[in-house]
Length: 323
Image (cartoon, rainbow, N blue to C red; front, side, top):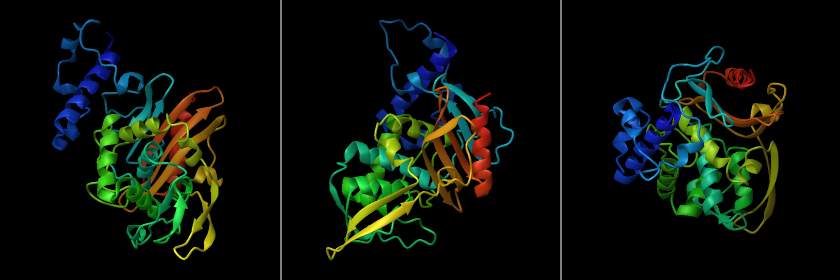
């Protein structure tokens, strides 16, 4: 059994233990491989315990030493080669960061898994968010909208009102939906994360890591419908008001690559992505991309100080995967 498989096995064991005991206080140690002697696992044979869990096909690293870190101005980032399982470039990928609206990747995934895209959703009073600077989909309490359109409202304009409507429709309340988010995140190994809302508005108990967000986006990309909601530059939805009046709402995506404000490296196309920004989180972006040669990668940048730093840094990061 080689070293990478040993690391994968140990991580799976640790996370399985966390899920069984439900002890949140241990989350910070979820990726600490120094706490155990993994050499003792080499005697396991095919008749013994097998760790065939989530980690068998993931990019795994037990080091937080920066790799090819020059040229990216952000608190945490990572580039993950899905073909080789290599962490190509990273810095601070296990450090706690605020995800802002990149949270909505997980919200969208759960909605696709738990909701009916053709169902009608009634926008609740809780969707009337008055936080200054909150990104909204222009929905009003009492509006009726198809779940399919609501997911575009979540991912294209990054509507916080859409996120709350989804949460309440699926789970009955934001807090119950947050429980579902944490359960789903832990199942895919994102144990250094904790979510308290479906949109990512600031809360000190709402956090993730660059590595966890890679895990979350990687899981979302396994759903065949996810990319269609996370790769659209513009979408028009039909909304029925509480008074029965039908109106059209057109949303545009703030992703600088989709908007044409920045360009990806030559030979690279974006297959899905989600932006995020708050004062606490800085500028954030998670992307799934594909090269002309068919290589799939995921790139994550958290807490860049400016909009320009975010996209220039993401371009620099992706370029490292082409070398």
